[in-house]
Length: 484
Image (cartoon, rainbow, N blue to C red; front, side, top):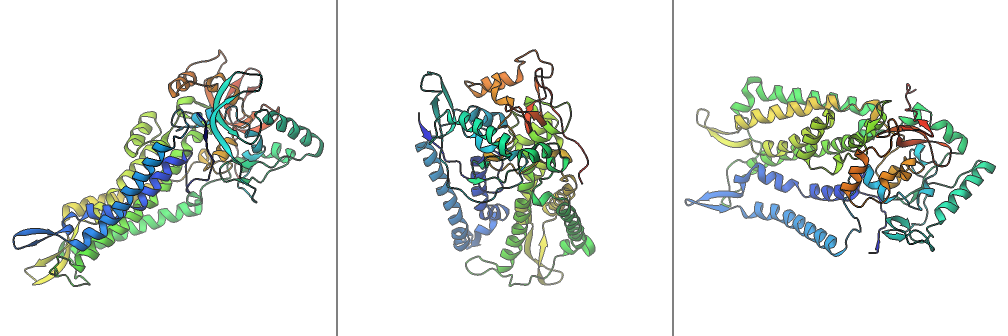
């Protein structure tokens, strides 16, 4: 039952569940040739002596990447079959991650990391193990989770007590440690930490670079200008319907290859693929940040099914659109729908242009198939105008990135959630969901959670996730204010 797991940094940009998106990234890297073929399937065949023949060069050029992809997926499946993950269920949400680290001895490495925006320096890697553990030498209690395998289980409490004594005397703190990137995090002093957790500037300081105000304005302007240029050039003087002169030889060779047809099928499809890939990090950002937006977007907090249990990053494209729409998260639903819609751009754009012989002018011109071209124009207009809705609201900003497990855990390492009965060794995912959605106590607001300033288990204020209201601690402070 023992399974070692070294927490390595995922492929960037990555959401909370790294493995799923690493596979998705690898799949996208070999997807373009198949998309081109889907756009122009007839380019694989040519007619000779009343019989269709495969165009050998195109078949070879497109089949090799597909074969490599299938081989990679086969090797991945073989590795997963041979080396089980050690997980009891798929960790798709924040609640699943909390269960894995609920009794972990690695949380002491995260002191002060909730307000840091990055990591500095380097340190020797640490080894973490995912398996079943015995709670102590004199205890028969067994639990499942991630622990630092080189340290005794009780070292968590010893190091935590040691840290508190050092802070009270010298106002210093053990360097927090990012579990995945294996780097120490830049850490503030105790005084600055207590000050920073109340600062709106610190609370809302992080956005991915491509969604900062300057870049969002640039994307909107570029998208609308290029969309208008595309529509104007397409329909003024019926340029697309009447066709245009190809810049390459258009006759088909004896082997069925036409340079003009290849150029005007590959290049539009290539541009469509770039547009498709450009939207993917935007889609993934809004999926991953929706739980935090719900937790910190209102002083009333959010129920577990709209925050801790959300698993949008791990959902399939159509699934996430339907699920978000039914839940009322319309921005995530629309952006994920555009991500799905953008996958049609390389297919349509690669299949609308053909070299045709125009009898009235007695010349070969490249013209578009108008039904497909009209659909392409509509999709391009929708895609371009959708940049107007990607401006992230203030509630979607965080103190720092969340691409690694260590950065996610920095918001809960002192939270009383880790002591809640809901996370105390659930037997299955169904058990965990049942506990979170049921009222475990009679406390008012006990079923709602929030992102803000909470009183931690160490008796100090921290910035992160906890229950909105606890009888012994009162209500959390949801940080608001105007950024300067």
